[in-house]
Image 1 (spheres, rainbow, N blue to C red):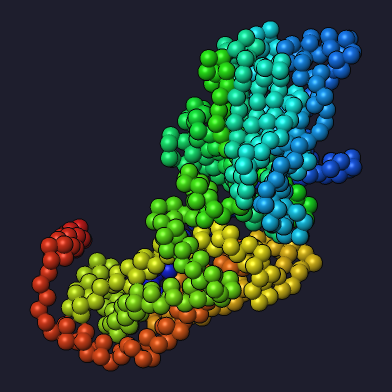
Image 2 (image 1 turned 180 degrees about the vertical axis):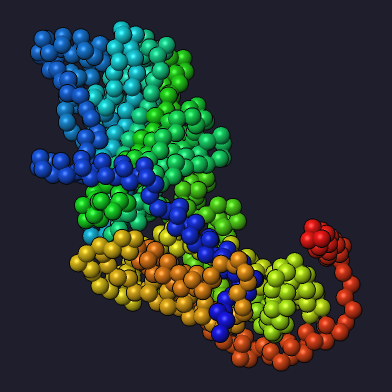
Length: 629
């Protein structure tokens, strides 16, 4: 008995979908550079553990020894002046001590350090980590730093992170204002001004100087350095790390990102915001006066087989360096800080292009998510549980796409009817590929069958397929929402914990990917039964792909969001049901056969393209005969 394979249109359709799935997973795999960096991070971590040191950060925030001078200590004052020059005055104030000032609203709690004047702690009040502890973006000043490096007119190089600011808290209506001043005198200072509004994750932030024209050396570059280690918040650190990266806006409304690996980019211009994005939470610095240039780095910590999830405290290290421009010898930058959820609706409401921080897909895929799936899912989840909302949305999407499924199945039914004749042509001209192709195309033309019509419906589904692939991992609403046995639809579900780790699979068993794999196998088996024919010479073994696709689903999706696996399971289940209805209720193969036979009797008018193709094939056949003579 001859081995059976897919026909041409099914091969193309499945190959396209298979290639897209493979490409999506390939994008999320660590590069050799990432793996090398992660091995190094693991070695550093082990060394730190042996010394009994904290592994939350690895010497990430470095500070020089603070200089403090009491006004009554003339020797200390003289020493401070020799090192700090005019800024020795700040070291003599009562605020010259390790202390913080707390400001907060209903959603955000910030602590600002006297030393450096920067935000040393950022707590999101309404959220918890995967293990139910308070969620910090910045903790104890260990994983973040904010520094201005500048030269002085008396030939000193100073860093604000090592100097003491004087805090003053005031109220402006319901807003809380914190002024941090690095003083040269009572009237001359560098100020960081924070203004926190009620129920808002966005903090107004201003950097300005007063009376420092003769202090700051305008001939030297003034650099702003911002660094952050992304603290782990999710159950799977490696999965969280896939969506943790540096993004930025430049040249007005263009946006870009560094990617998932270990990268450096030092040639961006007119940068208006920088986001150190984690999967579901983000720290963003925005400026009304764009930075003329900016340099970024991203260093990987997580997502390595050499680094167990339970050992990971941070996922990536970020840094950004931007030169600041003096205006009349003074600094004056109006900025904002955002510390909050990577939630499309919240970010989009600021109308500053921050929705680009959410990875909804490029081009048409992002458009589908923004204007179709996000509003529709928000509507459903407004009155349905989140798991049920996923099921309902999947059902509606599959019903809308059912005409496409029908066209694809109809094309397969027509090809099935023609299979005996195609087999006969293959046998008759098995030694003449050109003649076999000519007669096959002639048969298609007489029967009124387009062999590509089964491929086109598959192509039409790709934008929806890829858009939803981006939607579910980015849907903030699914975070820590349970459904059936899954305790978090934004992370993997676990029905069994393995005592060992399987490469590419993990140390646990997730049930939703298993169900999705079984469903896709049944679907592909049904499709195979509809389209089986003799394998064409040189064509790939698509039966292998039929078995490989469910295995890929099982392995790769074991660590993906359970909400995504739930969607694929329900989607394939509905597709199976639709195909059964089409096959047993709608399509009548006897009528299709009669219609094809009727079409064969009708004279067919060839188009210009068909005529040209026929001429080319006849010429090629004639040349082949001539060579044989």
